[in-house]
Length: 597
Ligand SMILES: *[C@@H]1O[C@H](CO)[C@@H](O)[C@H](O)[C@H]1NC(C)=O
Image (cartoon, rainbow, N blue to C red; front, top):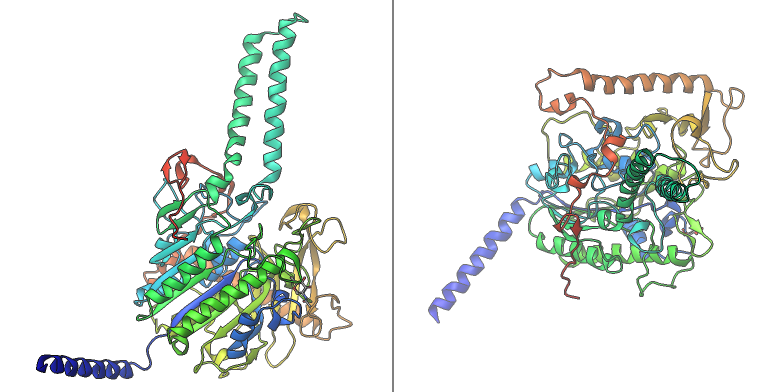
């Protein structure tokens, strides 16, 4: 009896001491739950003006937190936008930008990816003692030189836990949905193989029938070799679902090819479990959703429920998932100590639609253009919501320009990370979010299309104007269409763009849809805008040049001195068998996750 009493007393004392300690560190560092949807448009969400899609959970985050109305992705396409997001700097600085036709990583068996020398916000937080997890899509590379070196893998980039898609969800993952990978090259190789094969047979026939003299000794080996070569190049495409549609847990491939139907449940479960496991220590969860990229999911609970077909069903599923994550944070009592963030990697994909399914890509509201349409607003202006009850005012709206690259410095600031860093292009958002600042530090913003500087945004001090100059714009196809419907994605080079000299100028404050280009007659500041943006470009370019020249700086920031290697060259993009992640014995890769469902 006595000893039980003593034990109780001790327990009480411990509890009191415990709460005293946590009281001491009241100012303790917050958790971060970062949620990113793939290809979501700003017009897809209720609190951004959509009145036919039900997104009560996302809207609730905005009511309880801060909604950004001019939140800008650093690129209108996944790989460069995500590289910039993760590193807090334009993708050009990490070489994650393309000069030509291929603008995103295409194979897990390629060697391109986020360079090991780059620093992500996850790495900074990890160094500050945070437990860091990535659940969902990565799409920033895996291996460099051999299978399993994992030089670009999330575990190497600051995430102590990874569960999800080292690649992305895309059409090839579901039979019958078509292919997203080098479809033109596939056709060419297929035709070439066929043609050479036919040539071979014809040559043999001609000889056998004795029509005329052909030296078989020359012809047959020639045809055989070229047919084989064409076929060998073509064959890997048949295996795309096995090569690219895989799930990894940390560095282990646990499903290959993946079962798409159960993916939403599994990703959500992993995200929730990560939060639960780490409720007691500062954590970062980056929940990078596989939605709303095609192929669209057919989850029974949502199928046929929305007013916008399967795309709408998927949107409402996204909202439900966001609600579940929020519920997990709240039910563990973590709300007042957790900064939650919701965004999209870039705008909706307007060209993605067919007569059967109807709309398959996102909706960018009043903004012109969409995914992969260079600097047009629809491809880069995305939803941005921050919630942190008690710290951030509820229901606040920030209309100033902000960037997805701002997340890096914001998290760093909140994690009290004051160590030296490389040149960042983002700014700490807390002053704006808390209402302590009214002006964004982004006086200028640079919009890239691949490796090319494509447009510049200027928010002049003391003015409401948001000027945007476009140095070039993508050529829509067919001409006059609102996108590149012929090839489904706009490109940034050569005959695919039109250069403008003088540049096209708009004021987004008065003309958010970029429909009325300004002229010296209609805009008194016309000359000044061109002059100031040109100067800003010069200054911006000098920060890029410094990077390559500062070889002898010995500061911590010396990661800047690594010369940038382009990660998006053909040589790095193309599939190589020895880089291919694989469960089992290559090339017989295949496994299924054990799911207790
Ligand atoms: C709401 O979203 C759906 C799905 O993207 C879209 O088709 C519709 O046009 C949007 N409505 C409004 C008012 O933005």
